[in-house]
Amino acid sequence: MELRIHRRALVGIGLAAAVAASSLAVLRTDSGIASSHREAPAISADPQHDNTDVYAFVSPDKADTVTLLANWIPFEEPQGGPNFYPFATKSRHNIKIDNDGDAKPDITYEWVFRNEDKRGNDTFLYNKAPVTSLNDPDLLFRQRYTLKRITPSGSTTLISDGIVAPSNVGPASMPNYGTLRAQSIRNLPDGGKTFAGQADEAFFLDLRVFDCLYGCDLSEVGQDTTKGYNVNTIALQVPASDLAIKGDAKNNPVIGVWSTTDKFNGEKFVQVSRLGNPLVNEVVAPAGLKDAFNALPPEKDADVDALVKRVTDPELARLLQSSYGIKAPATPRNDLVEIFLTGIAKANGPIKADLNSQSLNKDAAKLRPSEMLRLNMSIPPTKDPNRLGVLGGDLQGFPNGRRLSDDVVDIELQAVAGAAQSGKLVPGLTDKVDRNDRPFLQSFPYIPLPSNVAVNRR
Image 1 (tube, rainbow, N blue to C red):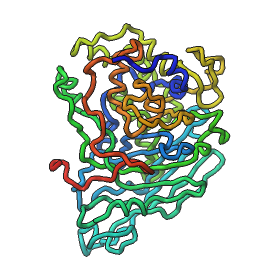
Image 2: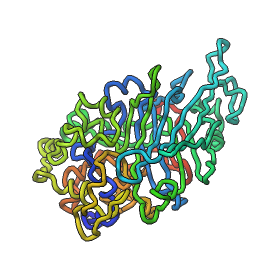
Image 3: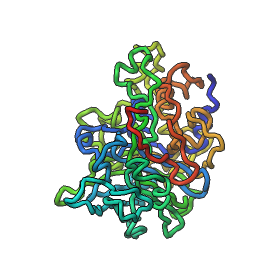
């Protein structure tokens, strides 16, 4: 199958610039095989603080805005009562933006949650009768949140009394869950919106890659491992001008996005989870560095040599060759370095490059190498999104940001196998999970409503 895009087109959208000089690279040469769920020893034992996925895309129905989503708590079984899945309290859930290329947050959106628990010692129930509104007295447990926008010059409270959409107990308890979600969406002072609550696990993939790389013969593909599970989501939709440096989204359209969880340890807040691009910590960082990566700020990434040296000689490419006979491209993999580190057209911050050049100009030193999800906000929404994103000729797709429908596993497998270098997709190299089991919504927050059916009954 011929690709509908070539390297020059990749340069032209500023995608690689967005990723530019990332020490871990968006499409790390060894990173394309799993979601960032339970990716490090410490966080796997603390699911409330486990940030599982981050999405960033130009809003398809409102192209002058950007939608940011981050998920927490992996593999929520819908029937997991009676306590279900509240957000962690006394912690900070953050979505961070770097808009000047120094790998430091220029804007932080911070959610802090608090409980309202009316159950006491009288009942074990989450609700005592059908719940028809977020303020229904029959809802015995609810969470509220405060949302702040923090910049180096100070902080502004955007929402002080937000209400979290509750866990979806079931059709008898919550006969119209869509109404509860709609009531939980809050307008922001600048014209944006925010949401916090339970949602469908929208990341689709077959996780049996860990069983000898899909059975050593690609026989173990086609099963959506996350089908039927839920997550907790925070979502934000804001004008692109709110995110760009100096508010100028036209001339400075590329932003870096990542999320973190800061846990209060009794004395101070400590970062315990971090996520930008999918898959990086889970399958790039060795076991001994996984917890350290979760605590690391992006500005320190380039200082960790052990995380930098695996770019040009990808282990996964060798495994694909030994298991499936897919010849590994010659090393060093300058094609991946070129596409994701130096193929710059327009970068976040002060960096500009010649559109006809595939190397950085003299201003490149101003960009601090760092791992985060980069989004070029000037690329308009695609009428018919291609699940393979940029590799499928769809310049708005991953790794230019990440949409809910982007098939990041297949995209990364193909890139590791050299698809962008050769101009051809590798036949059969797929986990055969091409889309989510539930349709995405057409308006904010886009992520599907949470399931209320037990996973083993689907």
